[in-house]
Image 1 (cartoon, helix red, strand yellow):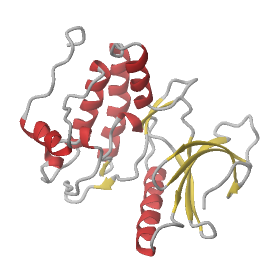
Image 2 (image 1 turned 180 degrees about the horizontal axis):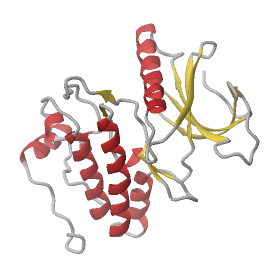
Image 3 (image 1 turned 120 degrees about the vertical axis):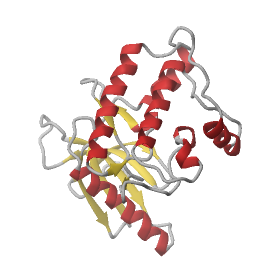
Length: 249
């Protein structure tokens, strides 16, 4: 069972629900140990619930969540979301992670809004900022022997006032083993040819995914589109990408 508004997860009081996913929720919470004027007195509390899962699945989900927390607490970079602490709540069978609050939403939300309202691509200076910030974050994590493996607009987060841009959601990241990985994970539209074809892959696949994100910002469409997964795999592996609009090419 998760946490309701007004309840406490360790030293954090839940203020409101921010979002809900397959295994849990993201909650706005405040750190009761800090006065309101202190930086980071509010956090994004990511919860992963295991109470409805089988024992084996619950163990895997719990370990994945705690692994993400351990990884984020090790990574120190201005464009990576911070994790302050994590805990397993045995009574509720919930893992919670106290993460840096990025209150400006994510880039996928911006893309969706732009498609609905303006119907024109993002300005080049914004695309360059995404490249600089996320590219810097990826360069750093790769230097630490880590693959992100799920770079996509929904995992590029924004801060409203400071306009900071940070890479988040390291839930399926992997420590590089012998410099290559083999497991097929990630969001299909952003997967590299090596991943979708079942080959070994490395840090270049994160770079490919970032390139797809930049294309989507510049064109408001992805470079590879298809009506079903098999057709998408074939296009990624065998066909050239769609062209950029004339005004952005």
